[in-house]
Length: 83
Figure 1: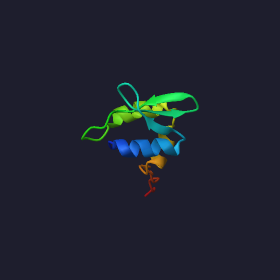
Figure 2: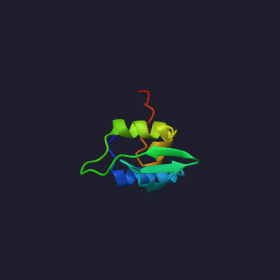
Figure 3: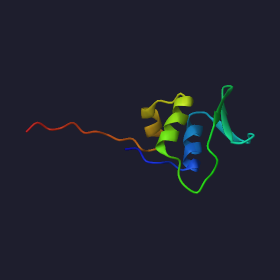
Figure 4: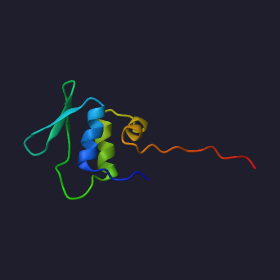
């Protein structure tokens, strides 16, 4: 199961995909890429749950495999050996 991510790490990872910011909004900060605006959660004491991160990367149109590589959370599965 994927792990939660800190807000700082979320922003760093999104920047690797070309998003710039964060910029101040009315209630939340946001990132910008090619005219698209991506709202990010406000800073809190705990990490961002994977379910919310999943929604954010879907809005950013980033494939899950690409996200895993960018965040260093890539899981590799080894083929099973026939015995």
